[in-house]
Length: 169
Image 1 (cartoon, helix red, strand yellow):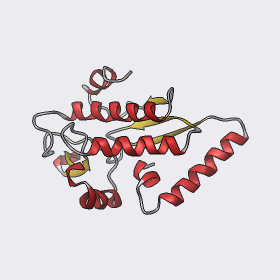
Image 2 (image 1 turned 90 degrees about the vertical axis):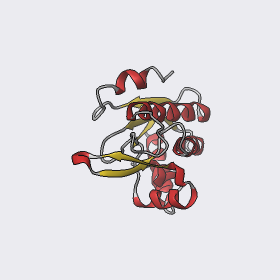
Image 3 (image 1 turned 90 degrees about the horizontal axis):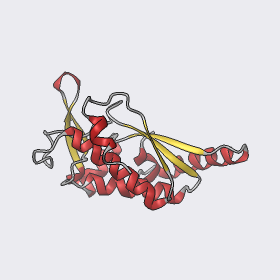
Image 4 (image 1 turned 180 degrees about the horizontal axis):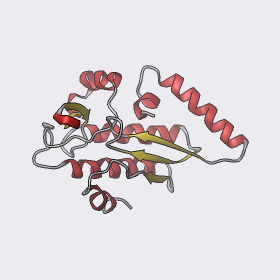
């Protein structure tokens, strides 16, 4: 899923209704709820939202075959991380029954920005991925002490594991 769809999208109400139904079904049969997102996934609506409200939250990254794609900026100097924090925290505050989030990155155009991003100032995609995971975890903990961050490592670049894992609590 795309986190933006459940938080700031023009269709957020529809997505929240779906999520509320899933949570109710799980509660009814005694299951805990964990939800998965590909972050930072930039769809057209999110890109338009950022263009209007937070242009410094739009980053850039090389995609396969050296094409350049826009991303949600995960540089420490950009505006994407505060927005990501707000979306994660807001979702978990509104849905306290969600016990954790599974986050994947670099899959399905969920690209972290790289040195092409105007906010990178010499930092790397590896650092930006670590920023993203640290931001998600901090927002989760602010919303719900004990919320679990589950990490899927497929599509990770070789350097990601040590950089990301050292930033998490």
